[in-house]
Image 1 (cartoon, helix red, strand yellow):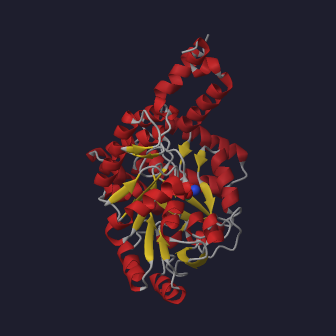
Image 2: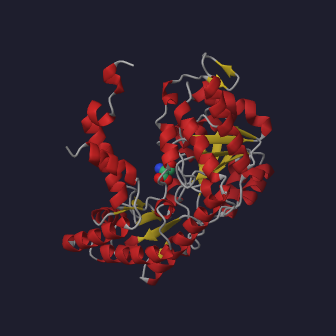
Image 3: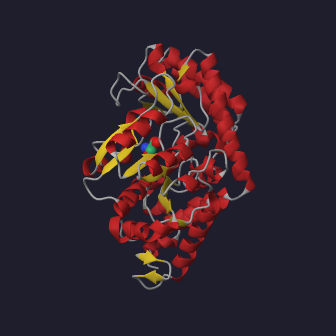
Length: 428
Ligand code: DSN
């Protein structure tokens, strides 16, 4: 290889190397509590940074539009068979670049522009791609939306059934990005069959829990199941789509050539690695701890006087109604960030504030659990969150808590070799 192309990153591009180092330090020294984030393993990172980034491989294993796909086929077949083993799906397509593209592919395989769909309202915990007016799903399809019951703040299955009966959607979409409770996939599957609708579950948030058997599987009740691979599943930033055998051909041609061109083979390799990790017994233990940590966080915050949307959690996340304490989600997010605790502002059901202000914050435990934190740490963190939100503008207090956060993080180190290697090579 030409000599200058063999240079390490910190020599070839010191500015980008520095930004990567700073991001690694940020992850290591702060509390990452965004419910959709996690920390991948070194093995996943190695696969992501592999030479497979060089490869074009349009098509599928054994039938590609490019030569040189011998090892690409090995990678994609391993990813497919591991995903099938984890979820028990008839058919899996591991090529979607993201969850949004996985969803788009499912729509493209069965629907035509103008068809009706029924999805969960974004402001009640759904997702943009489930029919939001600003998203392609809301622009191309005729959307009806279900939500949660105002009292229980849990999915209103009666409303869902009624809307399905009235609107006769061609597809019902379930799954959520800010919903802390078990989703009754069986019930939704029955409603779909009664109203002759196809049915899709987007399990992006809970895929790791489903893989570990800690959330009921949607597979027996759904025609299609999509997910991202980077949230509770703890793999690379990407998507995946599964379906019943009868829809396999349609789904595959919707992914390629329908929605995407060449697959990202290095990302598929990293998905395969994360799937192998998810098949290990330790993964189930990890997911159990994710759920226990979220439950502890919810009960600790409740004890400290916070209103938890729906009264608690069954999964990896909680939604806290901070507006009930007189501050907005926006202010809460900023103050917590100042103190080294990263969360995101989030609307709560029937929110009186717009999404960029929001009345809630969404907090998740997948990343901190990967670091090895447990219920004891969750109790400490809950008390810091309460302290920050009691005085969100007291900068001295926020700085004081940040120091405490950093001390705690030192006991749960992250990506140490990467940090040391950069520091050593830049110490001269
Ligand atoms: N934006 C993601 C989340 O944070 O939940 C969902 O795609």
